[in-house]
Length: 160
Image 1 (cartoon, rainbow, N blue to C red):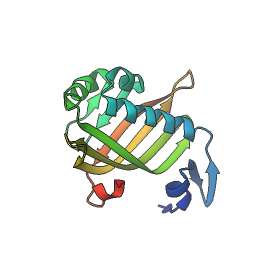
Image 2 (cartoon, rainbow, N blue to C red):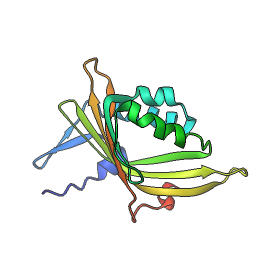
Image 3 (tube, helix red, strand yellow):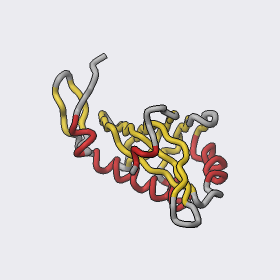
Image 4 (cartoon, helix red, strand yellow):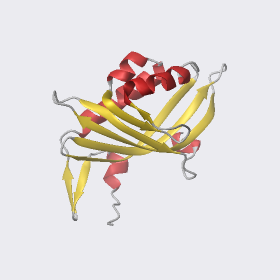
């Protein structure tokens, strides 16, 4: 397996994939990132209508703290429970984006934190996430697969 180290991924957020030793620019990286940005905004606003509109109907969610959930209807109860805590927000830092044939994978770090009454934030869980987006027949990108883990090398200070 070839190891991919590219400073552009981390510093310029340019989307690309590997073909041998070549780096190829991807046309849809900004569109996929925009969907992720809308997802993050919807999560942090607890806007379930917008959040669920960004998912592929056959989405799969496998997070480190619960079992696998299939389809938007399988996700709905989990998110409704999470959204009861209005202080919870999530931050994300992209580490890489790959795109090929109507699929795009964004991987990166996440950090949950909780807004306190005094305006400060209490840190929550941290880890890595891989998000697979699929382009639908209308050209819209939808979140099709979401898997995360808690990673010991991802810390709240990474988001300061």
